[in-house]
Amino acid sequence: MDNDITKSKFHLGQLLATPNALSKIPNEDIQTALARHSREDWGDVCPEDWKANDHALKTERRLLSAYRSTEGVKFWIITESDRSVTTVLLPEDY
Image 1 (cartoon, rainbow, N blue to C red):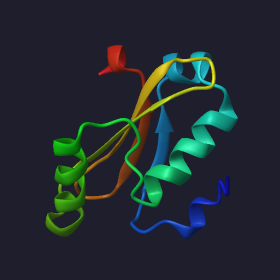
Image 2 (image 1 turned 90 degrees about the vertical axis):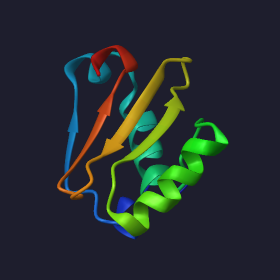
Image 3 (image 1 turned 90 degrees about the horizontal axis):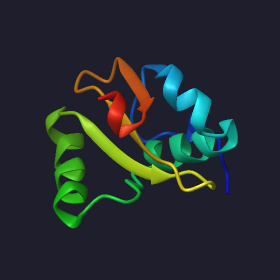
């Protein structure tokens, strides 16, 4: 998979990750998920959340994606509504 986030369909802003996420998710998995998120592939979200993200792109609302690492760890990527920050975190970090 192409992990180039410079092909993003929206501005990601500053990229952050919680210490917990960094300790449990391999860097390659984070890069792959960020590339997917930046190309509007919202990962393992329900159809309603997928539709909400698609709508949020037009209305400048927060974006939420969900993925699993190669080791099975569930994690989220959240881009804030003003597109200033994108954060990688585990659900328990929220």
